[in-house]
Image (tube, rainbow, N blue to C red; front, side, top):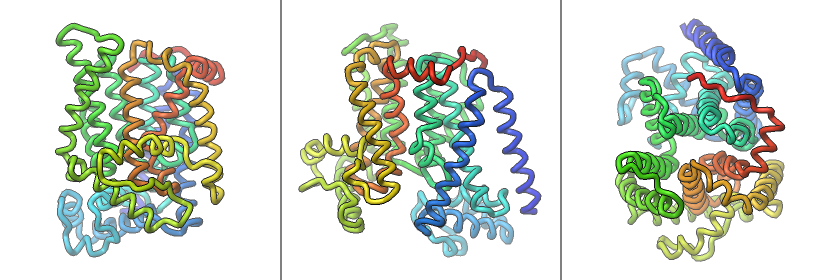
Length: 429
């Protein structure tokens, strides 16, 4: 039975890739390269953890997923009961290595893939990578159709930038979480430009939001607040029949955002204002305790207070965007990331003088929302996750959007468009 479902699902996955490729027109020539790069990255993540580190969440996710799949073969009722239950069943949870709710949720998803993948780690990794790929591809297509001058920056940032592709591939939580985030962004772009949204897209958006929240609630908390503020801003501008310009528009958007952030603080205990700062400092101290000397970012005298947070925010923002640099590198991966960060730092420096041109466009509020998302999440993750190796992975929550922004400056974007020879807009769909 396992072999039968494995073959059927493999054929379905192949048919889906072929169908999307055949139905593409404008961006077809990039599809196979981006798909191959994603699959290679997913396998690469597995190679790094299985053969280099010889441990990691990805191995434990697969092992627990296989354990759940084996339970399904013996006791299907208990398996499905565990999938849908928010509490642990003793006869099931005792066989898992994870106890954390978010990790167990990931294991539940992985178990579904193991049921249709011959219980093969590499095939599961490829399937999960495909989910992320199609989320990113959907977002790139929506940008191409509605904001064509940004197609090349979006394509590079989402489909080809090495760190982004690597840490959104393979059997890790970020892969599925970012797939959901990408898809939500794509549907939102359709909403912003007042395109028809299908029932299937609405249902997929709800599923994506749930997936993102369950796997990476700290990505989701900031993202949903900013997304909600932007949606309300658009709705208010339609209701009052006013399109706010310049500083007034930003102030209206920020006022809505601050109100929503207060609301998001009620969604999860760790987002409450009386706990958020303490949780960040506790995480910071935990990483400092268990990390090797020289592998962390030091924030002197950090305290769970707003004053301390504001004092360390500039350093945290810089570190979250550009570290590790060469003086931080201690191994091959450190050297590679430092080279990539140096390129980002140079591109950022070159883009500074072009910022006014970017924000003079008719989507300036959207760009403002991206900037605020990158800043808030970069500061939050860096302060609470000061280990440079872990930060290189966790920052994928905002890195693709930061890369997109610095490539969006007119001179760079135009040059990329010419190099990639982006074709005319595909108006279908």
